[in-house]
Length: 445
Picture 1 (cartoon, rainbow, N blue to C red):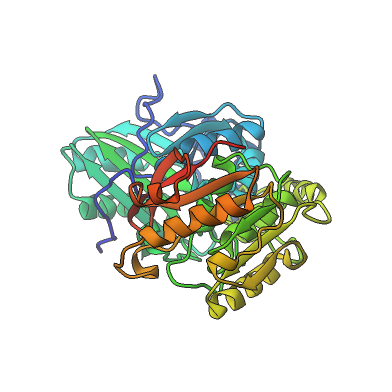
Picture 2: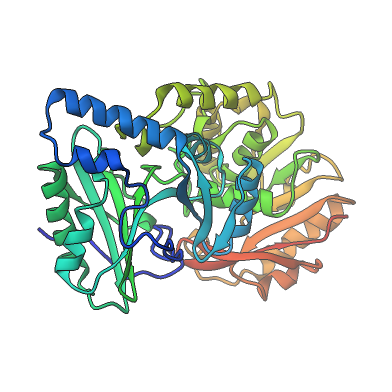
């Protein structure tokens, strides 16, 4: 049995770049081992004991502070930290994301409300292992049962770097053996890379990272990547992820007080995310019925349905009846506009966004004080031709139609973007579809 594994690098969104410091004094034990757990491992798994274990797990996950990690695409960590701060926790920016401490309620809220994060992990063990015997010994102490759904389907994502145990497939096999010794038979699934947009709907994923013989084991609380709001089923060429579209808006400090236009909107992601922000619709309920999408934590034995219901109802109570600001999207491609309309309908913001088939030069700027926020086509969207004319056209539209506001561009071409003739500055650098891109913006006028 060989489970999929891959080499880590910090542009991925699977948590392989997370290197939190080991917890002092835990001696390789799971981070939340209790006396009751130790006793339970010695008892026969009768029906009464199973019920007691579920009750104990529920109490721990609801009340205890857990070490968590919000994965962010490179360059977006600051934005995720700001979102977590708004939820009332104290975030710490680190490589590949943001660390924070929280109980079950905060984990639920982070998954439901964070617009820019890719995934929420919960750290469940940290230990040192240089041999497979040590690995199995420590792994059998991890409270795997606390995070396994009833179907027992497990996916392991393993990375190893600068460690005696370097064969990721062998590490995965030994861990699976330890898990089965602890909880009984399970169903292994291959854990596919997050950046392949693959789905593991029925599998609970654990992320295992070895660095210099130190092993950190985390459980995924999100399930599908958080950019999967559920509304974007119709797409144009090279679609922009919802998390990156939200990052463009939050990173440029658009606060829904000024009109917004995207004159190259594709399937409408930027405009739709703007409408969600303006109406304060949490990304996890971005649909007409305001129903939450599915998350991995709902399958945990300690899942607190009452707390989750409260979190969802609070998010619904925050929703405004309308955007209160004009939001326009346009594109010269009729198919893209059709897709944008369909996506806006699924997101429940049809009445908050206007989409039109227009060329860039004919873009409908809703007001001279509007914000022009766009992801100009590049790469597969326009082929390999010269893009200088495109950026020059953006500059002409901005100069002719805007007196105040701001121009915000996501582009891999900092030299070509100079053709706009606008005073652009870099707000952040990240990756989109494997391409390094920068968010450039003019100062607010």
